[in-house]
Image 1 (cartoon, helix red, strand yellow):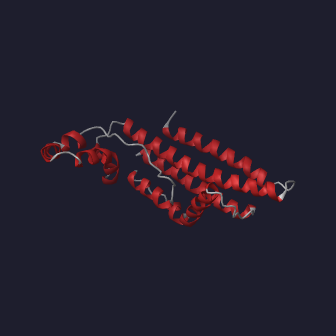
Image 2 (tube, rainbow, N blue to C red):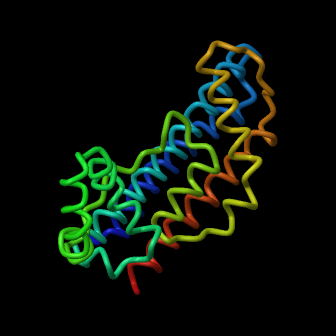
Length: 200
């Protein structure tokens, strides 16, 4: 299975789950209380799929890039920095003589070596700026991120409010669907951008 096929398969099951919840949200034969519970579940699930997919897709991308055996020096500067982040942190804490030795051998030890990426960290919440930083590390641009920045930030806020027990909810189907559409657009564009990047 190719990296894109892995990403595509992940996206498909996530979209199927969201579709089932959409059907339930659109039902007319449920009480207002049931509808409110479903909307809370829908917002939480939408966030989970947004964060989960982005982390999964970027992990697949970095794993595929690592499996090519490319040398670190042949990657864009931001991607090099991401790959070397843990190594650079450990070097900084060395005693001065050891630090100097590592600096002198830096080109051979790190830049001339096959790239090795750390785990993709979405932090406690995948805010739009956090996703933007991860995309920069991957040298990937998706225009829909800035276009849907506000919707994604609202999604993170809503998910946090649900997690912290707040009951403030807008139980309107069309309102929710606007956010789901924004999330799916970002997810699709990320999948396509990774596919294009892997084809280079």
